[in-house]
Amino acid sequence: MTLLTPQDLLSAAQYEQDRQTIRQQIIALKKRRRISVGPLVTLVFENRETLLFQIQEMIRTERIFDPGKIQEECDVYNALLPARDELSATLFIEITDSEKIQSLLDSFQNIDRGNTVALKVGDTSVFANFEAGHSKEDKISAVHFVRFATTPTFRDLLAQAEVPA
Figure 1 (cartoon, helix red, strand yellow):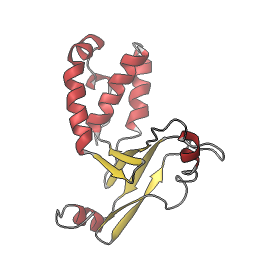
Figure 2 (cartoon, helix red, strand yellow):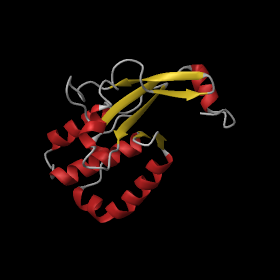
Figure 3 (cartoon, one colour):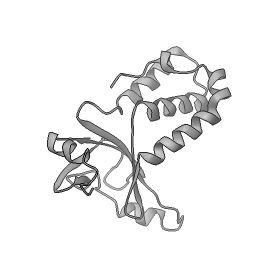
Figure 4 (tube, one colour):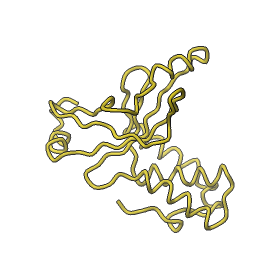
C-alpha cells in the first residue's frame, strides 16, 4: 500500500471546512470494516483512508503545524498500514460499565500473547500478531493494533461469499 505523506493531507483550514463531510464518510466506511467478536471486542480493519483520517484528526486535536512533526505522525500511522497479503486492524476492548472496567479489562490480560485471536474462514484460520507495547504484566490497554498474515487459501476463501466466516 502506498505510504501516507504530508502532501496527502488537507491544510488545517481546508480540513476544518470539510471535516463534517469527511467524518460522515469515514464513519460509514468504518461501519463496513467493523466486526464484533463477542460482546466486548471489536475489530476495525484499517486501510489508507481510515489512517489518513486518523492523522488529520491527530493534527487537528494536537494543533500540529511543524512539518517535521507532521511527518512523524505520517510515519507512525504508516506503520499501521497493511502490507501485501496482510490485514491490519485496531482491536477495541469496549467496556461501558465504569464499575467493571478494571476487572473486565484484567480478564483480557495476555490476549496479546500467543495464538489468542484469529480470523476464521471456512476451516482456515489466521492468528493475530499484536503490536508490542500495549500491555504489561499487570496492566493491559483497551486498544491494540493487530496484523493478520493471510495465506493464499485464506484469501481465496475470504473472496467466496458463500463460505462462512
